[in-house]
Length: 277
Figure 1 (cartoon, rainbow, N blue to C red):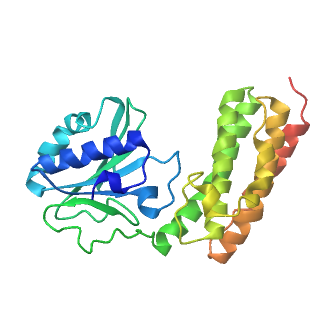
Figure 2 (tube, rainbow, N blue to C red):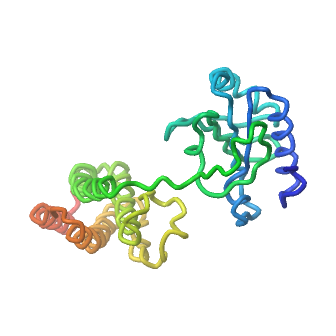
Figure 3 (cartoon, rainbow, N blue to C red):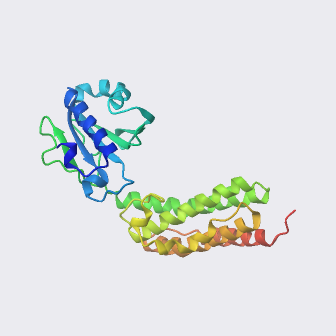
């Protein structure tokens, strides 16, 4: 595929053309593809380039060692970081012409886990992409149940150790960080309630994952760095959490720490009533 066949902004089309040329000229590269919103047909002016390159097994270590030089064939990177996870390596970079991109690296013998969803083949020297499917790796029910168990248990630990204790000591910044941790736990619980088979991934694509009005009560918890406002926000978060966590625990056969919840809810209420020293 030629970059001119895709509806890309000019600066991204330039980089994609350079990418295709670099991959064609590099004997270590056996195939390359374009994924993300451009492959799905949902791209807008804010979309980045999600790229994938498949490398001959015996050349992978050499390619990885020279990955920065490969990126520089595309343009001058103002930001370039490598991160690994899920059994593959990924380069995230921003070029001086304002192109943002993620580049997933895979070995020719095992690459279908480096991407999820549709893709457009940019070049395929060996035919390895013919019929290739990049399927969503769904978590198992056991994994999801363990995720839910952790969210239920750790919420109360965070409330006590990371919110009630520091705010009682006047450590507002520490306590404020706990508000975000507890709010995020609520978001992930709602995601599991909406679709227990989907991964709980915080705020990422939350607007597409569920009807956002389900989170409306949490809007009031984005409060000033002020003791009374923070305690009130914590109370809202706790009430929201209990409304979701208890029903999820019952639905999936998990114990709910009702006595702990009662004790710490009362302690939080007392904290709000106590005079500031």
